[in-house]
Image (cartoon, rainbow, N blue to C red):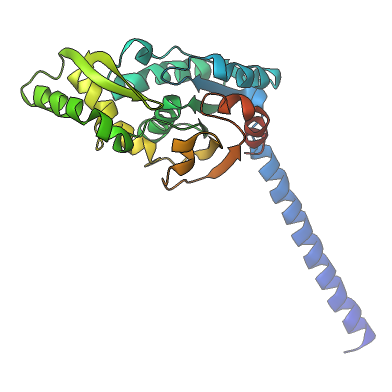
Length: 257
C-alpha cells in the first residue's frame, strides 16, 4: 500500500474510533441520566410488625436531606391484620399520594414484615422503580411449625364460609409466640405457607431493582436460603437496628440506580 493509501486507511480508522468513542460517551450520559435523582423520588418506608417507625427514622432523615419525599404510613397490622391485598391497598394509597405530588420515581423500603409487603406490592401491583428489604422477616413456611394449629383453624373457618369472622390466632415474631385477633381470611393471607405473604418472602414475581440488607446478628435472615435476586449486603447489626446501620449504603445504592 502507498503512503497515501496508509494515510487514508488510518484516517478511516480514526474516524471509526472517534465515532465509537462518541457513541460510548453518549451511552454513559444516557446511563447517568437514568440514575435516580432523589429530588424527584418518592419513598414509602414501611415499618415492621412490632418495631414501629423508630428504626426507620434515620433513613427517613437521610433521604429527606437528599431531596426525596418520604411517607411513613402506620400499617394496620399494629392492631391486627387486614387481608394481604387490603394491606397492599394501604401502600398503594401512599404511592398514589407521592405520584400526585410529582414523584417520578417510586421506592418501597420496608423493615422486617414491611420488607415482605414491599416485595408483595412490587410483584402484585407493580409500578415500582426499586425495593429495599431491610432485615427481611415474616416467612410463613419457616414459622408454620409454631402457627400450624391456628392455620388449620383458620382454614376450617374459611371452608365453613366463616372467613370474614374474627377469632384469636397465634402470631410469631422474633422467636416469640403471642395471640392476635383478626379474621380467618386475613390470617391465612399472612400465615398460610402457600399464601401471598409466603410468595412475597421469596420475592416471587419482583422485577424491580432490589436491595437486600441483612444484619450479622439477625440469625433468621442470615440463615435464610431464599434465592435473592438483586443486590445483597450485610451490615454489623441485629434485626431491629439493621435500618439504622445501613443508612449510608441504602442512600448510595439508590443514587446509583
